[in-house]
Image (cartoon, rainbow, N blue to C red; front, side, top):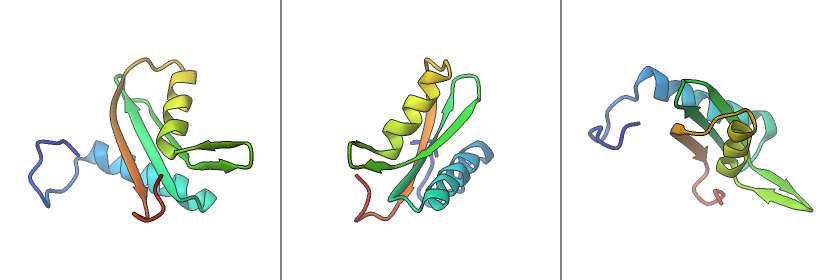
Length: 88
Protein backbone atom coordinates (compact mmCIF):
# COMPACT_ATOMS: atom_id res chain seq x y z
CA UNK A 1 0.00 0.00 0.00
CA UNK A 2 1.19 3.49 -0.69
CA UNK A 3 2.70 5.19 2.35
CA UNK A 4 0.41 8.15 1.56
CA UNK A 5 -2.77 6.03 1.80
CA UNK A 6 -5.04 6.84 4.73
CA UNK A 7 -5.27 4.32 7.56
CA UNK A 8 -7.85 1.63 6.81
CA UNK A 9 -7.82 2.30 3.06
CA UNK A 10 -8.18 -0.66 0.72
CA UNK A 11 -4.99 -1.60 -1.15
CA UNK A 12 -4.86 -1.00 -4.90
CA UNK A 13 -5.33 -4.01 -7.18
CA UNK A 14 -1.57 -4.23 -7.74
CA UNK A 15 -0.84 -4.07 -4.01
CA UNK A 16 -3.53 -6.67 -3.30
CA UNK A 17 -1.81 -8.95 -5.82
CA UNK A 18 1.45 -8.63 -3.88
CA UNK A 19 -0.31 -9.49 -0.63
CA UNK A 20 -1.88 -12.56 -2.23
CA UNK A 21 1.47 -13.71 -3.61
CA UNK A 22 3.18 -13.20 -0.24
CA UNK A 23 0.45 -15.13 1.60
CA UNK A 24 0.62 -17.94 -0.95
CA UNK A 25 4.41 -18.25 -0.68
CA UNK A 26 4.14 -18.44 3.09
CA UNK A 27 1.30 -20.97 3.05
CA UNK A 28 3.00 -23.27 0.52
CA UNK A 29 6.07 -23.68 2.70
CA UNK A 30 4.49 -23.13 6.13
CA UNK A 31 7.20 -20.52 6.70
CA UNK A 32 7.35 -17.79 9.32
CA UNK A 33 6.94 -15.12 6.66
CA UNK A 34 6.22 -14.61 2.99
CA UNK A 35 7.14 -11.68 0.78
CA UNK A 36 6.44 -10.45 -2.73
CA UNK A 37 7.98 -7.64 -4.76
CA UNK A 38 7.05 -5.80 -7.93
CA UNK A 39 9.81 -4.40 -10.09
CA UNK A 40 9.78 -1.20 -12.09
CA UNK A 41 8.33 -2.90 -15.20
CA UNK A 42 5.57 -4.75 -13.35
CA UNK A 43 7.07 -8.23 -12.94
CA UNK A 44 6.30 -9.86 -9.60
CA UNK A 45 8.25 -12.34 -7.49
CA UNK A 46 7.37 -14.20 -4.30
CA UNK A 47 9.40 -16.11 -1.72
CA UNK A 48 9.25 -17.32 1.84
CA UNK A 49 11.67 -17.52 4.73
CA UNK A 50 14.61 -19.87 4.14
CA UNK A 51 15.51 -21.58 7.39
CA UNK A 52 18.07 -24.31 6.78
CA UNK A 53 20.84 -25.49 9.12
CA UNK A 54 23.43 -23.80 6.90
CA UNK A 55 21.46 -20.80 5.59
CA UNK A 56 18.88 -18.38 6.95
CA UNK A 57 17.23 -15.72 4.77
CA UNK A 58 14.25 -13.57 5.59
CA UNK A 59 11.47 -13.70 3.03
CA UNK A 60 12.43 -10.20 1.88
CA UNK A 61 16.05 -11.24 1.36
CA UNK A 62 14.92 -14.31 -0.59
CA UNK A 63 12.48 -12.45 -2.82
CA UNK A 64 14.94 -9.64 -3.58
CA UNK A 65 17.54 -12.28 -4.52
CA UNK A 66 14.99 -13.93 -6.84
CA UNK A 67 14.13 -10.62 -8.50
CA UNK A 68 17.75 -9.55 -8.95
CA UNK A 69 18.77 -12.97 -10.29
CA UNK A 70 15.99 -12.61 -12.88
CA UNK A 71 17.36 -9.28 -14.09
CA UNK A 72 15.46 -6.71 -12.03
CA UNK A 73 17.54 -3.74 -11.05
CA UNK A 74 14.80 -1.60 -9.48
CA UNK A 75 11.97 -2.58 -7.19
CA UNK A 76 8.77 -0.59 -6.87
CA UNK A 77 6.89 -2.26 -3.99
CA UNK A 78 7.19 -5.00 -1.39
CA UNK A 79 4.64 -6.82 0.76
CA UNK A 80 5.55 -8.96 3.78
CA UNK A 81 3.15 -11.19 5.71
CA UNK A 82 3.67 -13.28 8.82
CA UNK A 83 2.97 -13.62 12.50
CA UNK A 84 4.42 -10.63 14.32
CA UNK A 85 6.22 -12.81 16.86
CA UNK A 86 7.79 -14.98 14.11
CA UNK A 87 8.93 -12.42 11.53
CA UNK A 88 12.70 -11.99 11.39
